[in-house]
Length: 575
Image (cartoon, rainbow, N blue to C red; front, side, top):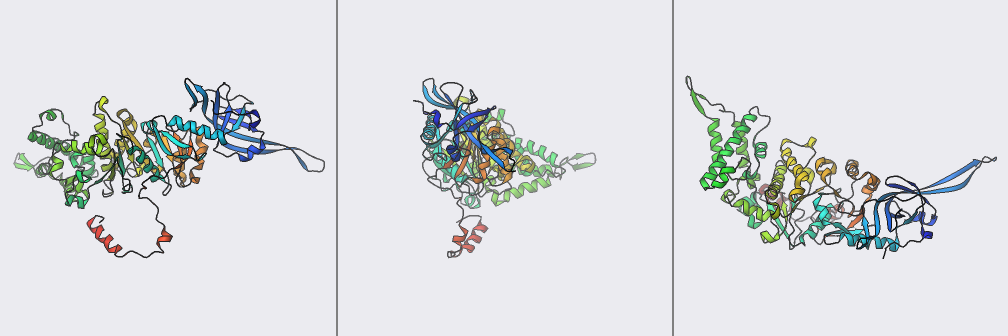
């Protein structure tokens, strides 16, 4: 049975003007005009039988016509013109093959002049929303909440298209961005072999627990001292996992006049250190094919010894010994390297113990961090806490995990590949605009840009999450085909989202600053309809709740809070 059963006498009015996607309707039913609201839905008769066109009301106006001014100088109002502007967004088919009531986001026709237009409300709206829900829910549904238009209709997204085409979740502080992310994580965790990594920069997703979710943290000073391992949920990201470009960015000062020499020596000596490791371990197969970027461990003491030797090298000359070509030119690089090695904050890179130098360590690491629940025996959703990583190396370290993920997917035979999603919270910190990036950030940007452009081929999806869309790299956002935008109060941030939406929906984004907490504007390939959705509350709420200052200032202060804070600060660990 077709869900729409309109009568001509119920019409809102008739079509007066049509262009490519916009329709002007001459409203004749004044009672309905009063109830019309911008961003609500309307239905128009199609020029083809068995079809209705669905549109979004973008403007409602009433103009009063004025006749000639009479002899007494008083103008006489003789007519009223009520108009409604509608943007066409899709077609409702009574039947498509074996299926009934099918909505498509295409326009196969446009309405004719004088075609009837109906307001979509009441039973018709409920029926339409249920149809959308059942279509979207066909085996791959991702539930966010309820439609604001109809609180009884569940808002489903197509889970395949949401992750295939990358997604952006944005909103000002306190708008419900973390709730939305937690809601998505919650549903992913319910899938039997879900596979995702959440970059949690401040530990706010630590309350998310349950089957299917596992927590890791990048080792802090206290973890290094206690010799905690990956089995304790503590991750080490050793220096030898970094690409050659990342190692150079970390250890070579670009402003040093000897920087080109230092970079060249670094490449040569790292290559030799890896070769020595493979020879000592009898890894003949790898030895034939490895490069400076291959994830092969190497001994840092051996590398430091070689660099020191080159820095003080003396060579035979015409009148006895003379300084070698690189004598004294590596001093600043060696000092930087030593400072990094002895920096307790970077213990997760340099003090992982003998385990991380073991040839089998990388497989153990990838199984735990990149494996789905069926592979690692624990959980498919891995939430990694980066809160103890120093901010100056944060982009390098976050992108290191992303690069390992992409590389593993790239080198997996296509028939064995299992897709993985990267949920990038606070993305503006490690995916900044090129103009705002430092040299170390360039490494991070190159990696994430490559994933954004090529990830779909290898089964890697990006979900970019940020409160400042205007600070996030434009390439990342341009590759996202799904947008879940919460309230945005900053004009620059609103402008970014407006430019990314289709031209026909430009006006729809004007509601961004007026969205309630927990409300989102959802547009994209995964959503059949550009929708305003009220996000359901997740079972476990993230730690991002806003502090009630006025209430807290009326409660007694807890004992020893400052002495505990100072002690934790000194130990670099929250007890």
